[in-house]
Length: 541
Ligand code: UCC
Ligand code: FAD
Image 1 (spheres, rainbow, N blue to C red):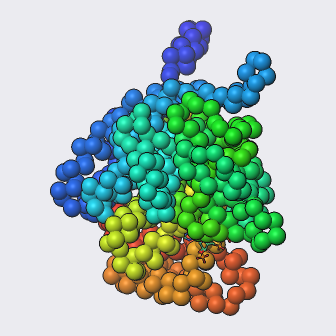
Image 2 (cartoon, helix red, strand yellow):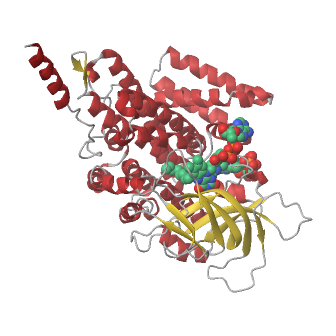
Image 3 (cartoon, rainbow, N blue to C red):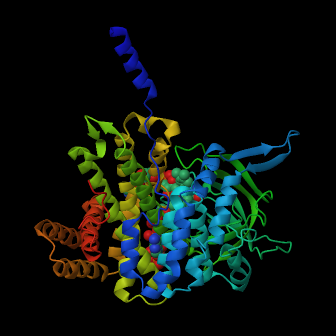
């Protein structure tokens, strides 16, 4: 009798298999907040025009694209510096999955939708909704798309006829065979936050006719160059012709790396690929520019200001990808917690775990609303429809959304790993990657501190910016009758902004406090405005 009950116990443990987490079959249909936001912001005719496409993408990202992304993760990029005979070849081996994801992005207008401007000021929002669906299944193809978009916008603003007529169409192509991606090389060994120590020099000794009208040759090392399989890049360098002149100022250069993806780089050596904590499917290289032909863009010495066009686009991409990363993690977690049992019920129904989950959802909602409000303002600005106040709000919300979402995604991903229990720590469940990949968003495209300083830079540079922000917050705080906590925090922010004039070191050291107060106050308003406080996107117990 004893023997048989032990055998039964043994059998039941052997026959128990935990159901793994599953994504919704269509992530657009399942996404209540995305739909709520688009329904309340977009005119009806635009909803009708774009929802079919979002629905298609929402289905693909939860099926076909998962296989392509898995292929990217299983076959990380490889750099082969030499051939068997010792000749430098700098071959880059990239997975099929990566190419397919790039092709999907081109065909579905992941970059071009924003530039075709078929939906006027709402084109950006449509594009960012596509990116939001695509990013978590893209193995970081989202990264070259971000930089391609930033470069496209820079060429729109500063490019000459050739760049606009020959290069821009490649960046905006919907044909995978014609589509080019672009990179952005700013960081050097001496610094990524502070690029003033850049040692790359530009010499104007172009003698032969260059295919893309190169004006200079570049010499130097770029310490981080992501998506090194790209076709083009923007980079910074000092003018190096005359050592006696003050060459401190940086200029912006366009580099054409290759016409076809598999071509070898000309006068650029890949020193090695970075061995990274996350983003492992993305080829990030250290490169040496050995007389690389390059073409100056914009005014000499205005490189940092000019490349900030790229930064302001990629920072919004960064925020969208963080929000998307949170949504994907929470979708997987909710499904899992509704299947996993402990102490006699599914874990989702334990009040404490439910509270944890709900708080993560709220962090996600705040992040989503700040980010998509930024996308809405960006669309208006690009279409010439933003008021002066809206332009100022956009300038402030861009670094704010970048820094806030990048911190929230780390917090959310870490809790998600823990909420999966031990399974969250086991590599082939796919869950640990969520945490590893989350860490990058707060580093690249400007760290959290640099974003705080960027916000302070705006307050210092534009005298009206503080009153514009405070007025916006006060009017909306009153409109939505926000509570005492909100009012107290508003007064705290007002006090901090008033103290900016004192120019002492506490101004900078309060940078994070200032930014996180702004994020709280602003996101509270957006939660009310888009009626999210009723928990309409929070998984019900
Ligand atoms: O990390 C990178 C790529 C990663 C892969 C792609 C990820 C895509 C994300 C999608 C998710 C999947 S690329 C490297 C990114 N690097 C950074 O973000 C640099 C961080 N450092 C900064 O942001 C600094 O603030 C600097 C380097 C931009 C500027 O520092 P400085 O030297 O102190 O600059 P100044 O003197 O304050 O600014 C020079 C001029 C000023 O204008 P003027 O001269 O007219 O007064 C500034 O107002 O540039 C202007 N400026 C800006 N204007 C500076 N930043 C901005 C801005 N954001 N918008 C407008
Ligand atoms: P540092 O500038 O040395 O900063 C170190 C720390 O000091 C940071 O925490 C920073 O916040 C803090 N700090 C610096 N200055 C201040 C200050 N004034 N006040 C307060 N705190 C400060 N770069 C590119 O150009 N192109 C790319 O394609 C690219 N791809 C990347 C891919 C990955 C996966 C990663 C991780 C990075 C990539 N980068 C790229 C580099 C990235 O942009 C930089 O790492 C980043 O900007 C920080 O620069 P840094 O590494 O030199 O850090």
